[in-house]
Amino acid sequence: MLQLMWFRTDLRVTDNSALAAAMQAGPTVAVFLLSPAQWRQHDDAPSKVDFWLRNLAELRLELQRLNVPLLIREADRWSAAPEALGKLAQELEASAVHANEEYGVNEARRDRDVAAALDELGVHFHSHLDRLLFKPGSVLTRTGTYFKVYSQFRGVCYQRLHSALPPLVALPKAQTKLNIDADQVPDSVAGFETPSQALRDTWPAGEQVARERLQRFADEWIEDYHDNRDFPARPGTSQLSAYLAAGVVSPRQCLHTALNNNQGEFESGNQGAVTWVNELIWREFYHHILVGYPRVSMHRAFRPETEALPWRDAGKDLQAWQEGRTGIPIIDAAIRQLLETGWMHNRLRMVVAMFLTKNLLIDWREGERFFMRHLIDGDLAANNGGWQWSASTGTDSVPYFRIFNPVSQSQRFDPDGRFIRHWLPELAKLSDKAIHDPHAGSKGQKGLFGSGPDYPLPIVDLRASRQRALDAFKNLPSASELA
Image 1 (cartoon, rainbow, N blue to C red):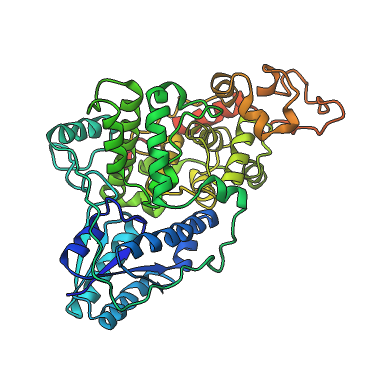
Image 2 (image 1 turned 90 degrees about the vertical axis):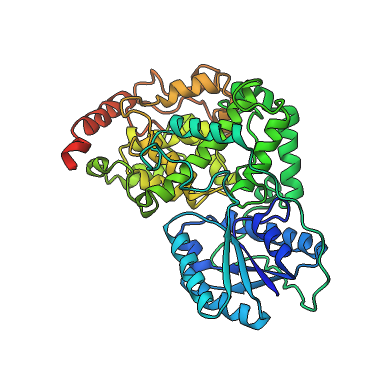
């Protein structure tokens, strides 16, 4: 009986749970649904949509080697997915549809509706664990609830990994060729402009590229990952987040590669490998939070009492932050990196987020939305988790009184100003000391740079704005008062 494989954010043939299950069950046809209205509703970045399309084109070639035709259909919004898939299943006389699980309120609703529609047609819907190492609901507290604290969640994950590592799924053998032609993958989708060639070159498509990046990271950088990951001018991170978000590489592949480079250990041995595995578990944690506490995927704070925070309506400050014109070099450099490459170094994501939510006291949702609209690796769970952590509104978040000073962070993690000089060339001639705070001691005067372009004055006083944030959090009602 013919099987239909529904690709979503799992754009690879290697270690793909649903594809392997489908091909084992019978001759298989693959489909991808274009949903531009839904993507716009989710604030998906043009660079991210372009990355999907480029990876789809590579996936089509990989599937051809397996004699699996890839079809492209449209469901402008996910509410149209049940009809689109039902119609295709009937046309193909498919007996089952296979898909890998996705998480979030809208994703869960879509899949329930698809399953119900297919059931009425006598077509089975099979969902498979693939984006995560552990199925949400399988890692719980002793009282049967989802964890709220990462370290406790990690401890249970470690126990599970000691018992049995999630195995890699074997690549299916090529099937007998079907009399069905694959569709062409479009080069673009209306409403999402094509990014620059420089951005595209930074993020080449295809699972072969992803596997090569993973192996190069393991061979060259993972050993010192714990030391280098916080320094944005160093090649210390894996550069795999976009590939993980699109499912071009799997977390199982990442885990096995890390363990292979650390004699099978994930709690001891090389500290770099251990630290990177912990980052994979952070990713896991935030996805479990999506399922266990669905309010976080509905623009709600994890900590309900923080909904009472007196966020400022400060459009000019928000715009300056979005355009990299805050007068704080490390903030502006990080924003320019995001705008030009579709990516921002993780340490800087925290610094930039905390500056917006604490120093500017602007709602974290504004930052979350802006990031999603520009990140090539935009992922609801990770992005929401990171923003709520920085804003002290989320699960296991940074205490509200621990506010990063962006100048101190810059001095610590970009000590010679290499990162700043790269993204803010107008500051290139400043000394290593002055580049972190160009207007220090200037008494509010511009013109520090001779005949070159001026750099804006800071839009906020860091000390005074820190106190304003502390006062705002101190005046919140307690969680018990809201209960």
